[in-house]
Image 1: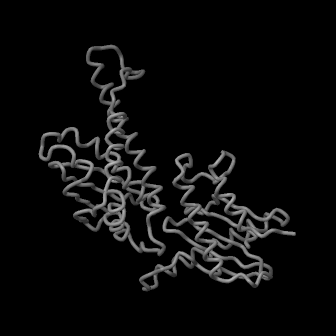
Image 2: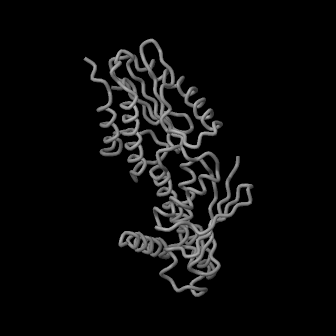
Image 3: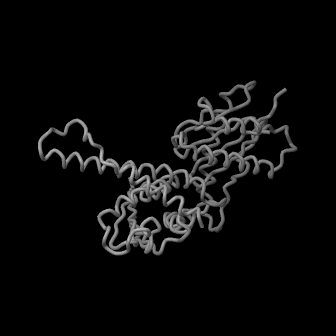
Length: 145
Length: 173
């Protein structure tokens, strides 16, 4: 279960960022911001490698003492960053991958929504616009007790 | 397949609807006898750009949805090949017939039997009417390229129906 989920546009500004409310949100915003450097590094490193198939899933970006940060990039250079609690050791790589895949599918649905202008923030203020996306992210966030 | 023809009908109606001449040319055109023509001309250009921007938004969404799971685009040419093969196949159920480039940012995509021009008589009879049926597709290409990170200008030209050529010029800042 994720503690913070962020969608970053290709110009590196956030389209959507949400963290569990009990924690200090600014800390997560900062973590996501610093992880963007690591994402850029990984993308350019992949570009130079001669491997024919490169993956969208970037894997563990960097671990801190409390959290682990995972990254994923799409073909349109939109980045997804997920922060996960380190104490949750039961979370395996496959589960993270499937969470990113669901994120990607939801993001694609938002993109195909005719009322969404590409480049805008993903808000659920208008009924149905970001509501499905929001609900999907909620299902992924950790229920903090 | 019945699916392809549904889009063709919709496209035909879109062109017919957006092409209808606006009876009021708008402010700035005085009531001189020759005032009719400039007003009509700007009306037509405006409608073409409306069609093109409709295609642009569709292309943006398609550019997000169509590429496969892998990060397949290592350079510009890969993106253009994706347009010619996967995008064209998804929309028109056929691939582009030829792709040429001058390796300096200009690509010419040629389709010898463009599905949206096929219903019209082959040859030169409707040559003047053809461009408005290509505006949407130009926007489509531009939108898909934009999502995949390439700024471009797309124009189309018809020598003889139903063949047409799309010229993509990459804008490097």
